[in-house]
Amino acid sequence: MDIWHAVIGVAGLACGLPLGFIALKSKGQRNLDRHIADERSKLDAERLTIIKETEDKARTRIEEHKHSLEQTLQRERDLVQQQSEGLKQLEGKLQRQQSSLSTRENALHEREDTLDAKRSAVDRREAKLLTREQELDGLSEQLTTRQQELDARVKAAEARITEIAEMSRDQARDELFTKLDEELAVEQAAVIKRRTEETEERAKSIATEFVSRAIQRYAAEHTAETTTSRVELNDEEMKGRIIGKEGRNIRAFEQQSGVDLIIDDTPGIITISCFDGIRREIARRALEELLLDGRIHPARIEEVMARTQQEMDRHVLKLGEDAAYEVDVSGLHPQLLKLLGKLQFRTSYGQNVLQHTKEVAYLSAAMAADLGLDPKLGRRCGLMHDIGKALDHEQEGSHPELGFEALKRYGENEIVANAALAHHEGHEVLSAYTTLTAAADAISAARPGARRENVERYIKRLQALEDIACSFKGVKKSYAIQAGRELRVIVNGHVLGDGTLPKTARSIARRIEDEVAYPGEVRVTVIRETRQTAVAR
Image 1 (tube, rainbow, N blue to C red):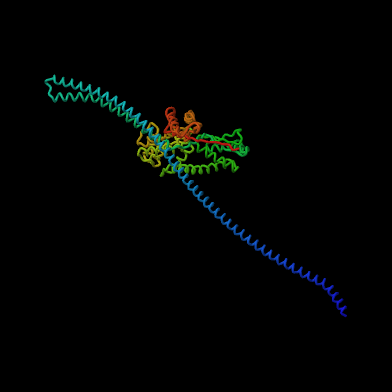
Image 2 (image 1 turned 60 degrees about the vertical axis):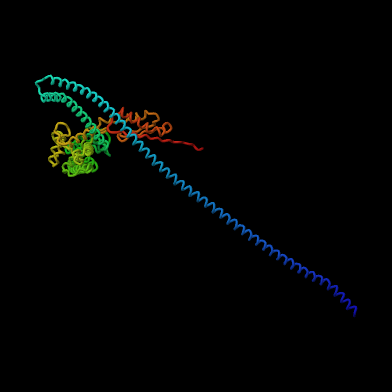
C-alpha cells in the first residue's frame, strides 16, 4: 500500500514536474512579456516626452527666430520707407530746382530779348545823336561865321553913323535896326525851311509807323474768283436734256439767267460763264436744282429761276449782315446791307471785294485809334468805301460816285459818304477819316498776297528771308511764317552753342535789314536742339 502510494507519488511527481515547469515557464514568460511591455511603455512615454520636449524647444526656437526675422524685416521696411521718403523729398527738391531753373532761364531769355531791343534802340539813338551833333557842329560854325560877319557889319555901320554928323542918334539906331532886320530875315527863312523839312520828315516817319502797326495787327485771306463756274454731271445724257429739242431749253435758261452755258466734250462738266458773280451764282444753283429734279423745260426753268432769285436775295442780305456784324458796324440800311453782301461775288484784280472792305475797315479803325480819332467811325468808313462796286455793273458811273449817291440816299452821314467818294483822287477831302480810308485801301490792295500781281514778289521776299538765314554757319533749316513777319531758324546743336544764339539772331536780323525790303517788322527766332543716339545690342 505504501509502495503504491509511493509509486503514485512518484508518478504524480513525474507528471507534476513537467506540468509545473511548463506552468512556471508560462508564468515567467508572462512576467517577462509584462516587464517588456512595461519597459516599452516607459520607453514610449519617454520617447513621447522627449519628442514633445524637442517639439516645444523647436517651436520655441522657431517662434524666437520668426520674431527675430519679423523684427529684422520691420527694421528693413522702416529703412526702405525712410529711404523712399528721402527719395521723394529729393525728387520734390529736384523738381522745385528744375522749375526754378526754368523760370530763371525764361527770365534770362526775356532779359536778353529786352537787352537786345534796348541795345538796338541805343544804337539807333547813338546814330541819331551823332548825326545831330554833326549838324549842330555845322550850325555852330555857321553861327560863328555869321556872328563875325554881323560884328563886322555893326562896326562898319557904327563908323558910318559916326561919320554922318547930321543924323541924330535915334535915326542912326533906326537905320541900324532896319539893316539888321533885313539880314536876319534871310536867316529866319532858312531856319523856317529847315524846320519845315524836319517836321515833314518826322510826320512821314510817324505815319509809316502807324501804317506798319496797322498792317501787323490784321492779316486776312483773300479768295480769287474767275468769271466761270462749273457744274458737275452724274450722267452725260443730262447734257442733251439741258440743251433740249432744237436748243430751246438752253436758250430759255440763258435768257432767264443772263449767263452763257458752255456744253462741250469735257466729260461730266458744264461751264457757266458771266462777269456778274451774282448772276453766275444764281444760274449755278438753279442748274443744280434742275439737274437734281430732272424736269427740264422752259416753264420749269422760269419757275426755278424765280425761286432761286428770291433765295439769293435772302442769302446776299445775310452775307451783308454777317459782314457788318463781323466788323462791329450797326445801324446800316437794309439796302446797304444787300449791296454789301453783293460784294462777296465781286472781285478786283483777283481780290475778293467783301474781304477787301472788311480789311480796310479794320485797318482804318486801327489807324484812327492810334491818332486819337473815333475807331468806330473809321471802321464804318472803311466798310462802306467800296459799296459802289456792287452797282457799277448795273449803272453808269464810277464806283466812288455810285457809292456816294447810294450812301446819301440811304441816310449815311457826310463823313462816311465823303470817304466813299474821295478815297481815290479827284474829289475834295472833307475829313481825316477819308484820308485814313484811302491809306487803308492802298495798304489792303498792296499788301503781299492780296492781289495777283504781287504774289510773285511776295514769294520772292519770303525766299530771300530763308536764304539769308541758311547762309549762316550752323543753320540747318529756316522757315518764314506769318506772311513773312517771323523767321524761325533751326541750328545744329553740335556746331553752335547756347551762348552763340543771341549773336546769330542779331546777325541774321542785321542782314535782313540791309538786304530785304519789307513792311513792319520781322522777328527772328533761333532754335537749338541737341539729340544724342545710342544703340543697345
